[in-house]
Length: 228
Image (cartoon, rainbow, N blue to C red; front, side, top):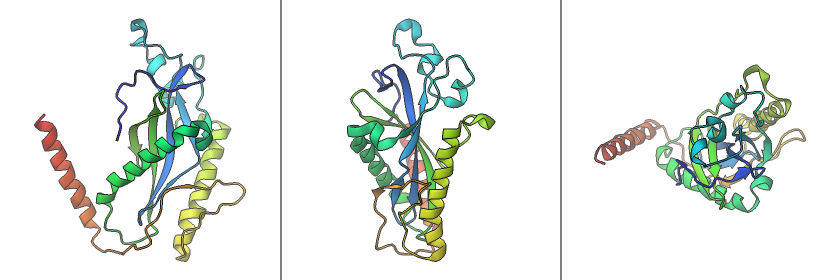
């Protein structure tokens, strides 16, 4: 997995501005991973420049909408994008990142007591100029209110469509105990399947083992870090 610490040549929005993209995933208890087809670009306020005089300028490098929108004169907005169309050839690389992410989730979700349970994840990714994705962070649940009460209409629509589609695709089938439907009505968008749900899902009452597995992993990781 690739972590973005300092990408010298990031992919630029409008060939000028550094950005990262906030994507929305749903992880299901039976091993499925789904991507909402629309996402948000978090754009820096000033054109990208790595000149030494610009290295300390947060308006050039910071891609945090909750901070950037406060500068009304420089703010570039937070565009809503169609993920597949925007990334085009790079989408396969993005999908590979998500598959790897799922592989890393798996050891900590082996024991599930309900196949219909799911979590929504906000994933922040930055692309370099070679269309290679770098993971910034995952948030469960994702932050929604970047603008507070001033959220633009297109953001409200994205969120409304997403939550209606989540209910249609992941909640209703669980309540009806039916296979997950992947259809949506005219006002919502279909979730893109990244990893298929497991057909051989086995219910388990030992969900505490998931937390135990994570604690063991965390303890080993901290010990490894101390030894560096």
